[in-house]
Length: 374
Image (cartoon, rainbow, N blue to C red; front, side):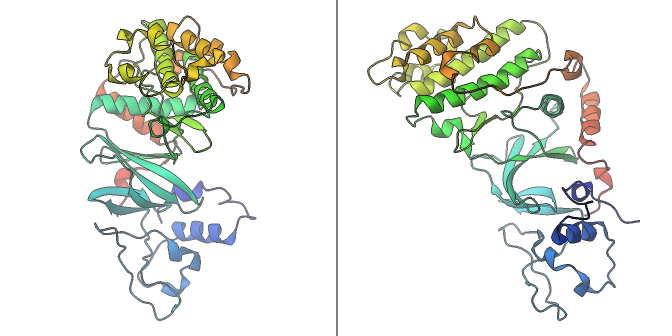
């Protein structure tokens, strides 16, 4: 019996009679067993651009010319395996045939526990980011498991979702939409108050949802928040905070302080923020001196100054701050709440966390990855 790839089966329209002929041919080809005696001319033309294995220098391995189909490109190779192994700058990725890797993302270090590459979703015609995370470190495994279950239980338009996930040889792969950059990429630009308010409002909306569900983020920085050119924003994850219910109010205030630091960096020029950027502890900064502003400071806007003071004081909740006059042009999206017991990883051992993670991955790919033969 042929192995079936649910990544193909779950594609939109794969079971609909009205789906396009190209999608149907791709689905049937993925489900069909391959025999060396099969006539190669029966391969659908829509598979001509299926992803091929690549060598270390990024070049594709060419297929032999077929006399029965002279129009077929000799530089492509039809793969009948569920996954293709791709090498990018010496780093190996095991990718479903639905995705074609392009390049390692800028700033990726092959010595880190997480490596990412940009890729193309061949069926949706979208660009995606594929992360490769080693699960050898128990803390990393716990954090990734927590992020995956929160993505499912508490989805939010301003937190990066995971569309696909699978594990191979203690390595976790996750697929998410590709963003244009990070807040750190635009921090030197002089943004209007409308754009700063839009960015601030989206961060607060995501954090307010987390706080209402008893979750602190603990990792809000310019580098952990993605943004598109239209100022649409996504937190990279649900944070690094633990599940403990102790000192939650203090951790909530730390989240608001981090948001205040981000907002102030956009509102102030580099000279005003020099002391802030060089400080290792945000609590050591005399914020009232910094917030005095100057003739070039965005803090001359009364609502911006008011919001920043309230963020840094931490007396109001993130939910209350969403109603600040600075955000009069925006409305927070609706979100859901779940019982805390469902979002807590708890005191599980490393093996228990890995078992739970693999159970969660079955929601994406209900098959045993260890049985896949390349």
